[in-house]
Length: 140
View 1 (spheres, rainbow, N blue to C red):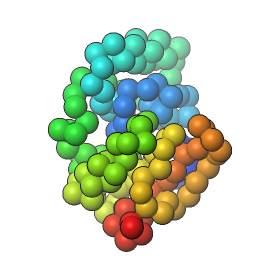
View 2 (view 1 turned 60 degrees about the vertical axis):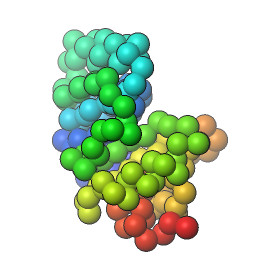
View 3 (view 1 turned 90 degrees about the vertical axis):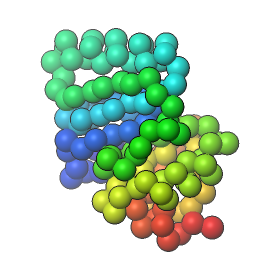
């Protein structure tokens, strides 16, 4: 996250509850909200977050049991998504409606159907960074 957004700290992050994007050490200054439909993943992420806090990492994480499609994304500056390929077109439509001008989206594993500002990594470790203008202007 720091590599993709080097001058951004203490911003909100949205995505699923995978601890990889929310409670990694390089994200420890972020306020983060994980949204997940699977109660076991929510519980797992809450436990992992608590363990990291006990080791002294700073930050504020919250994991909520909610359907991403019914959750409003407009209050987040940075949105991190660990999704599946088949959900990306519908997610793009949701972002068109709910993203704000200063928002960024980081898609992990699968890209959105538009041109990203930046791509990092290869294969399953590929990450795509989309700025608001990418979502609004470069979509096919």
